[in-house]
Length: 418
Image 1 (spheres, rainbow, N blue to C red):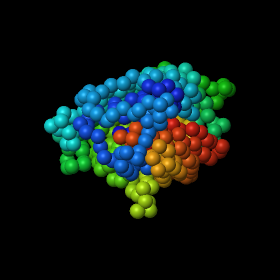
Image 2: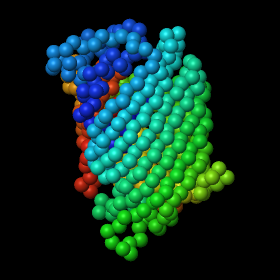
Image 3: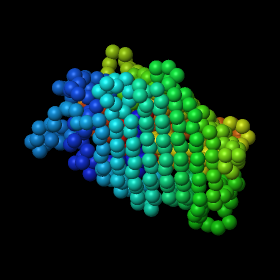
Image 4: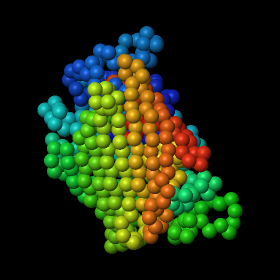
């Protein structure tokens, strides 16, 4: 599981009363007996009886006992009103829903739960965001189906191409967007999966909103179009040996996707991109519970084909909108994106309720199809972790990042950023 934010990243306002008060019994429905250990804010397991989370503390405040950990059935669902905030959306109202189907008792431990997540967001900047995401597993995890469908009506800011643009270069671009990604992967070995997908994207009603007339933008130089359609295959290789996808303390994650787009499939042009992503987690120092997490995210254009401007590699436009803490989404854009981030996670309280992180990232972009990577673009920051669920290890993550040219801002996630 990645950190989920649906662009407008949730802040715990209504979330506290509607989610954390029930999360202990809700999330652990796939188990028949209470566990003996759980994950603290750093991801390290500790005895259950010495751990707490926000729901437990909230109940203590009102003098109510915590609910017992028990089996509540194979199917679980929730509908949550949430208030969100991010640099690109401002404040947003979100209705989020989730459905989880846990494996039967006979497959418990050998099969992952299947999940469906969706939400509807309306933001301060008149943006509409509607994603549907599913992670589906067959018997004994032989097959993994991955669905990522999204609709966006999305006025936002773009700053041009390359790594040397300035904040003053920004202007509004408005568009409507449909994304339909689906992949089917088959187990190759215990933790390694490979397979094929179909990726479809369509932009329409694309408009540039400029303060002055007569300006030739980078979008226009690259090839402005009021609409574009991209259809391609996706060849995927996925490795996941993390001990906890929500809050990993050890293991690794690798995701490689090559996406060739073809006119014979309905694409406006032939072009090809390659994503190479790798994450690694380990305790540092080795004898401590603190976790050092490393993330490499490389989004490259292969060959001479030109992706649509709005599908070029760009800050904050990874699948979960998490690259580039310290910068607004779309701050940098180019032919190639090379990204590195490191985060150090440590606990603040022995009961696992509070933790903290420090992080630093750097990104680099090439401006055009024929240019090499330009300047290195750093950012750094710190954040607080609040345990939402002691069973799953899920944290509320509130970070503040600082970048170049006066860039800074808040990033909020449910679950770790990576």
